[in-house]
Image (cartoon, rainbow, N blue to C red; front, side):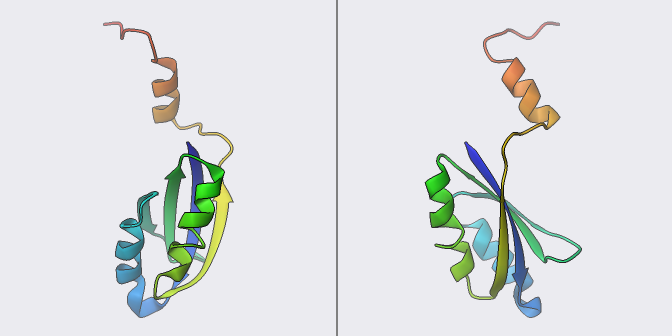
Amino acid sequence: MVTAIVHINAEVDRIAEVAQTIAEIEGVSEVYSITGEYDLLAMVRVAAYEEIAEVVPGRINKVTGVLHTETHIAFRAYSKHDLDAAFSIGFPESD
């Protein structure tokens, strides 16, 4: 699984509409409205790096109201949720 974090600037009066449209794109797992330099943050999770090109410039950048995107590719996941899942594979939980 390849994860990309996409920061998005959108037209101010279309932020909610843009977020909803992006959330419906295959490969986008979540969209957040955020504070700071960007308006939205989209989490893209796909099977292969090549698919990021289909999702970000191919779909997200073409959404009406999107002004600019900046994409970051995740190398590794360190969240407690991901680590718990990785270490529990094949082992029964103890009580």
